[in-house]
Length: 229
Image 1 (tube, rainbow, N blue to C red):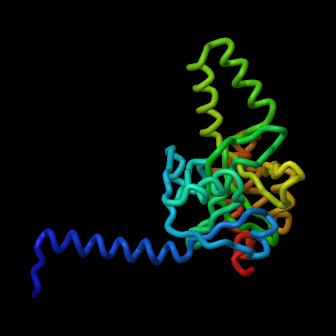
Image 2: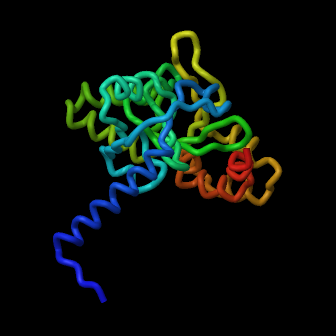
């Protein structure tokens, strides 16, 4: 049996880590638009560094929790401002910067997304819209920064599902649609048992939460259809 010193073990571990990075980096790529994503038009990337800046990474639905960077400043600018999505292995990281719903935005950062159906991407993030932004402003005016922070944190915890099914407009904004009762009913209309399970939650706010929606969608063939493309 060959014995290795601590230095040799450390070196071996380092080499193994480099080999792993090289293997993963060979699969790194990004695209600049929804259309490029559908058509498989990707641009290759070298090693990417992933920084998770919230507890959302503990579950795949977590909001725009990730910052993606490389060793190249020009590429970093593209990833921050222009990229639509980054693919690391089989994982899709969606850029939240240009996503819009009800004239509201999430801000900078990436979230994990999944292909669903024939032409859509599903991701999970906090509920946004003019109503939610107004609530934060009102709370902030009444109770100050701490109150506004508490209100924002509450929204972050109440994650909902969104779908992207079209590209950007002339200003580069990408419209998204939250999964509501109507859309959910369309997505599982051929599964009466799943409709019963979905509407078994009588509280509308709880019914729309990702923690309720995702397990039900997992029982459909929608994710499998995407994987076959």
